[in-house]
Image 1 (cartoon, rainbow, N blue to C red):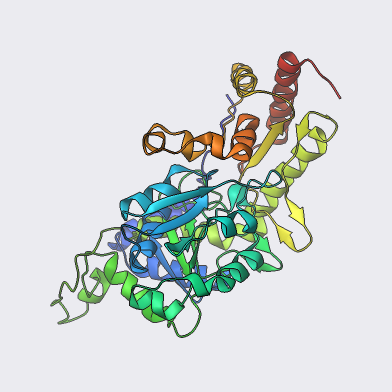
Image 2 (cartoon, one colour):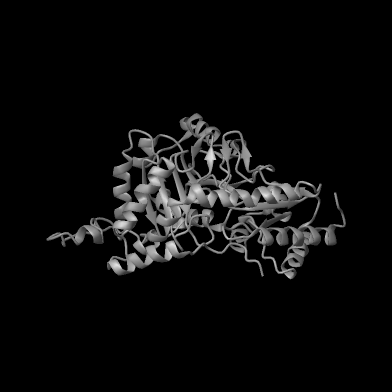
Amino acid sequence: MIPFSPPRIDQKIIDEVTDTLRSGWITTGPKTKRFEKELSAYCGAQATLCLNSATAGLEIMLRWFGVKEGDEVILPAYTYSATANVIIHCGAKPVFVDVSPVDFNITGAAIAKAITPKTKVVMPVDFGGWPCDYDEINALVKKHAAVFVAETEEQEKLGRILVLSDAAHSIGAIYNGKKTGALTDVSVFSFHAVKNLTTAEGGAVALNLPAPFDNEAVYRELCVKTLHGQNKDALAKMQKGNWRYDIVEAGYKCNMTDIMASIGLVELARYDSDTLVRRKKIVDHYNWVLSAYDWAELPVMHAGETHSSYHLFPLRIKGISEQQRDVIVQKIFDRDVSVNVHFIPVPMMSYYKSLGYDIKAYPVSFLNYSREISLPVFYDLTEIQINLVLEAVVTSVLEVVGVNN
């Protein structure tokens, strides 16, 4: 069976993790702090906080901004549940909007229609590694500043809707010549095991808040908020005579460990020169072969100075139903090739349906989902395996749809 997206675990990673284990410092310590600085330098962020998940990063930024019951947060219907769940956790209302039929991403026009005086945050999602149109989104929230109702000190300082990018898929992607992580107010990366750059579990918050915010000061505030409200972390407390600490708020527990950061340091060092090069080669091969078939709707990977991070290869099959897609997926699995579907739109999930959301309100999201099959993309995927994937996909589609070119 060809797997879908196994992590890359080689000797370099094993050696770095072993070094951490032998150092005696396995929780948040020097390697986590180093990883944060290297991430900031890599993506051009003003400051970066590493955490145990992207989900924690999204929620902590909503809470930092004061999002609460009665507030609204705009997000695409086409995303993973984590993007919506964190809004629910804060007591606020997820306001889903439909996505583009071209690239799966949220559009400025859809956001503009959804803005109300209750809107506090917009959460664009860089689906599959393709960046949203941040120039449009950033201009849009500034244009609507007059309707923004500030209720906290942070909201007063920003004076408009916060753009909180769910960049879980898109580290290393480039939008108009700039890397994700430096494209808007705050971007949150995921380093889960299936991601391009993994720390097993983990995530990071990249801060680029405008003046008068001091991003380093916000980083220090978030360090406290994400470690029980404790005003010193373990690294600081280990300094001679520095044992005494205080709890200054009822904080959370979502710090990254040095074991996780060890993996990330190796991954980041070779990310542009090796990982992305290999992933691009795989998706280019898929595009080249599948472009011969009229039924294949291929994903956008390059456009001018904008480039994907090649996290997913979301193939869409033209003119099929959800039921036909499911049969095709099963036939591909029967040929010992693992594929996936990204994503079942959140309004289709039982919990969100129970809140009154209906996928019929998001027809493009449903159309994209019902025809989508994600093909394997991972570093160790061989040329032979790539061809086996393509053979399984093409044969399965033809068996179900009965078309050729």
